[in-house]
Image (tube, rainbow, N blue to C red; front, side, top):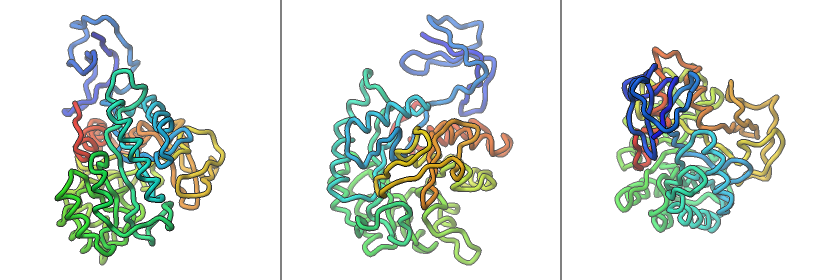
Length: 359
């Protein structure tokens, strides 16, 4: 048995100080410090003690990308993000050639059971997030226009054993039928993203079975008093919604509103690319020839050493822990207390992706 003392423990009920957290292979309980009987005592030195982070939207890290279809690459990602506090994740593909996507799915399929073993060096792989290729070319963002496909449920359902989330544009021809078939024939979560759907079309998609929104506000129709868009649909229904909480993709002034509107259905994600964890410079992106990274023009997760990057879409990369810290430092505890913030990086993503969590 081990014990962590002198830390701020985040629980469902709130923050707990002056107690010790006991654990071995799993969490065992919270006791007063004078009741500690442990083989090893770890001094947290006043830091937060939080559940392991779950990142359901992360393309890459340390120069590797899921869409490369490299087993060693995904091992590198898993190992790198574990050092950032991520204990499980969904390797996320981009819109590349379908044969490349299937190769990436096969690698995730092989590694997923291995990642559950005690000897696996890295965060657990709990499935795959397919961001595309069934998206709107007008909202492709950094995705490759050359490999966008119309919604085809049969293609995706062949990989229902490994894909946990698919990001798609419901307004594309056949989009609603795609949603109905995928949700009827699998446990895959359909997420609205990279889409020009109107508010009404988004509501139709949600009625058809879509239950998630990919990186809220980004690459979608925004909130307008006459045209509420996808953002309006996300805020007024019970779907889960991702947020890249780096205060660049979405202004931190909206964090409180999102917390009030979505509560436990707000999911913090990184959307990190292969540039994450690398020094400033240039690196190739899965769907683009290159991704420039320069600190003077990039978004940083302050105060954090997280990697930053900038491209023609100025898409920042970060770590899950940096996203958590940015959220807590940009929102007053009264409006967005830290315990709910931890739920956004642990319980909410696990519940949304239908994977178990002990939190």
